[in-house]
Picture 1 (cartoon, one colour):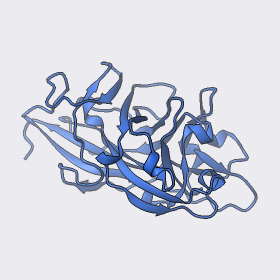
Picture 2 (cartoon, rainbow, N blue to C red; picture 1 turned 180 degrees about the vertical axis):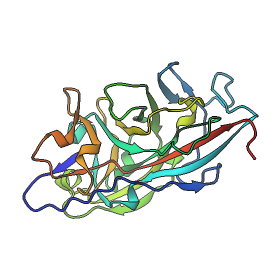
Picture 3 (spheres, rainbow, N blue to C red; picture 1 turned 60 degrees about the horizontal axis):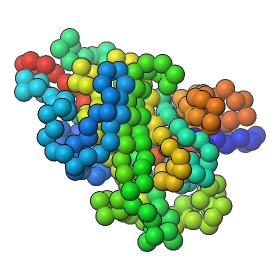
Length: 273
């Protein structure tokens, strides 16, 4: 989370996000090349990318189940790219956003879950040739409107340049962190996390849930951040002393969210027609 404070800030709030139906074989972002094993079972889990395909320990949707996928949230529909941020330059280790899923229309034989998270990973153009492949970045999903309680899942990916398609981005002149180092020219790739490998098909239960970024020291991988037009009351961050809601600071007039895309799927058990 980056925040903006001052006397003349326009805060644009976007809390209702339309669900857009997409084909079950998702075409946005990077295709997942490997099955991700869950490191923990139960209400919380952590997974890391592996080279194992078709691992029987990974939960699969049963043959008598069918799924339908939707785009739940796309940051590019409500904001624009503002900065490139990492734990190593900004100092916060976790940053999550409260999102909504309307489950009121689900039938008794239907469940839902976050099926994929995409984040915009950025590498400055000057440092791209010498970027050290294999550095890690993590995403988190919380089945609650607070990261302090409720089930949660964590997934890890290592960033290897050859595994992604990189596009050129130019940051605005007022990019706070990247601008400090004159790193306005960036190469970016949307990195996809297939969270079906860690969130069970029995589904999630909270219509308000959180999705966000986790860095572990040294936390060098940079993620794109939006403009300061997002709601602080829906943005939780960890600045080193635990989770806190950014709206609790009266000086924060607008928050900057991680550049993320969130997909959900509805699972129907039994007759899908």
